[in-house]
Image (cartoon, rainbow, N blue to C red):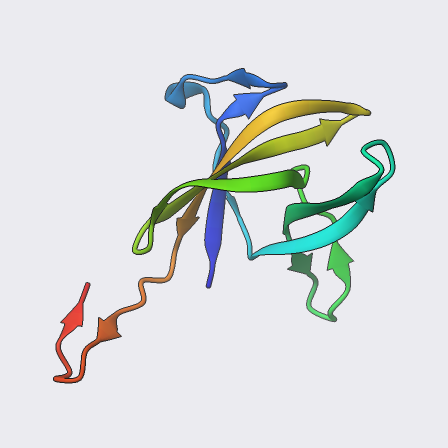
Length: 114
């Protein structure tokens, strides 16, 4: 499912919604990796991008470490909080993940929901 991410903070400070940067499109993936400073394995959300030949393209935004789901509307948006690492410093961040594909579920009668 395609998604777009809006970051609501800059260097840990909450931005007014008019100051948010443009949404960054791409598939979002979660993975686990050891964190050397925390001395433990942490979860991370990342924007995964690949070129036409399958090569990796670096994400235009930092990974979100230790993500926690704080809001969910399965038809529209998911809000996740955590921290980003920028130049060796950790900053609080919230991602608003907006789903672009509108999946329609159907019940046993074939009736669906938009």
